[in-house]
Length: 322
Image (tube, rainbow, N blue to C red; front, side, top):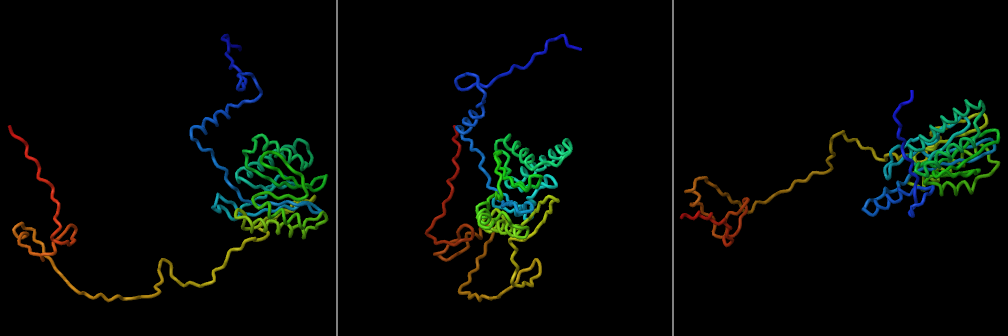
């Protein structure tokens, strides 16, 4: 049933530029940001994240590797964090950047890929996963801090994609991202070959991640590997311990909540002079207390010469009577 009263619709306002003409872009936020900066507002600073992730192609598939250290600025928050995420049984992804962003991006993309597989009834291509990730990251214009190295194997063979937070991507035979990129990439450029086998590929990824761990404070702890082939994937959790914890060399047999006494010394004090003073509370006896001429009692039990006179408060003024 239609209402007899007219429905008032919201008026559509189109953005205008500085001259008042209609345009296809809105710069309201730019004016707001300029006013906030002029008013003394300090914009949030970028937080440095630490990670070393690597992906390479070998003759039978792809190998992904990542360290396991999660940091909050200068603080190590997690020593055994998993940075290799599952998208499909033949597609895996390494994440660098904000931990929550990488986790949720891979979870949402994995759900979308599952729906795509159910709708089409075929294996999801690797390029399809790359396209979904790139679209979501580009939609948020780099505000999602997720830098990804994705690898998988489909009917077109093994593929490695390097996806940046702004939505761009590179298709490369080997890739590295994170704060340990420079050290890891130097190892990959020196030792990678197109005909590398599985054992050599694993060792190359270990060396690349280790280079990032030992040359970057944001990377550390263990090394995780994931080998993806046409038959499936093998996730090797804690494959190598990159930075082992040092062992205590000395043995300390000290009981808990106790302190070890290393030495004892006794000091002998020599008494050169002793004086005793008695104080009586009665006012008649206070006047009769005699002290040496050069010493008089001072405030807080201190002694001072007689020449120093104590300052006394002036007597209160008497009210005038008429």
